[in-house]
Image (tube, rainbow, N blue to C red; front, side, top):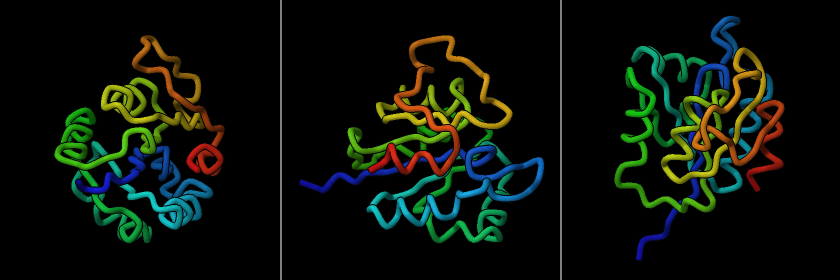
Length: 148
């Protein structure tokens, strides 16, 4: 039987990267390093243009992620990413800043969810049970206390 891996799926904009200021979110790089050290396989989903791959490389993020999925539909990104994966759902997470997007899709996929409640969508509230996160974090660094 294949060993199931624990993963963390990150949203890119406003979770790892500030598109308005065009910089990494403060603390993002140390968080990624720590999670890789803890044995997590990291993935990123994005609905941005294919240039996102270059931006991630330019930011020095490429080496931390096993895979990046870029489509024009976030739900499709999650479906593609999680297809045919041997994932330990109990030990895997989705981290994002939007309850109506990443948190919802993570919950529907059966992963644990962490809402980074900061920035532009910090006041976005869940409308449905599927949008309620398992955990909330005030910033990206705070997820390290949740993902042990």
